[in-house]
Amino acid sequence: MQEVRSNLYPCRHCSETGICTSGEEGKSCRACVKYHELKGREFTGLACGTCGGLGQPEPITERMNKRIKPVLAMIIVFSVLIFIFLLALTKNPHFPEFLAFGGTLIGGITAFYFNAKSGSA
Image (cartoon, rainbow, N blue to C red; front, side, top):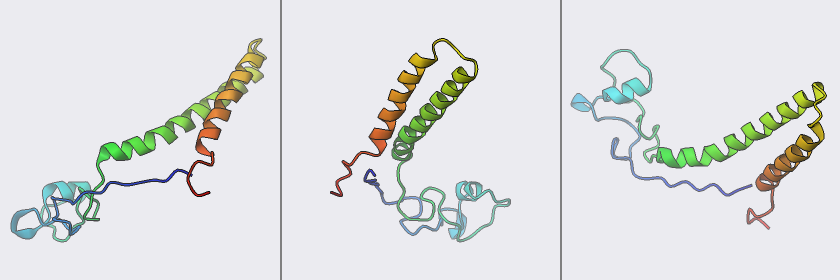
């Protein structure tokens, strides 16, 4: 598998404690109350909504970049499998060509995610 690296930065919202004290008189701020989907305004000791209580958040762009590739690969593979199944059911004359294309595409995606270049060897 691929080595996943995470760039964490000090959370300025909670001063790296993981507990929000940014509101009035050291209470949790409205943004963190809304993040936890709580009703009311007076809460103390809520986990920071910016970093999730870790004290070190990961930027959302990095999280999205790590998740988009695998999700896109799954969508492509499942949609190609569905198309192959539908073409086989309808006895489409182009089924052999699409099967060759789809098999190659799925094989390429599988080879990308399960190759041995993870560095553990």
